[in-house]
Image 1 (cartoon, one colour):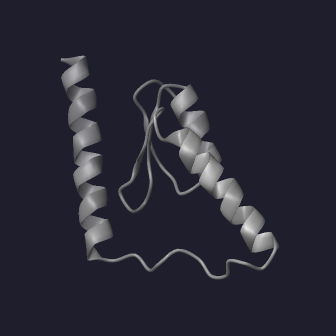
Image 2: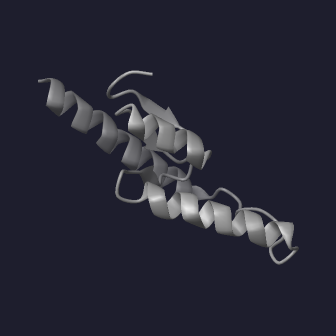
Length: 88
């Protein structure tokens, strides 16, 4: 992984490692992971994992829909344009 690579992942710890390497991380529903929000995302992941272990939370994320696809494509385009502007 190199500077300004874009990684598409739902794996929050992987997204955190990408950010440490100065790569960009984008969730499959279009949520960009940033240095500002990765801590909260990791904490929420740990909390939900603990709740699942206790049987308090069952099921998974909602199904992927058209808004998710649209948000993903928009954020991916924004990331690509930002990287291109930096290199120009």
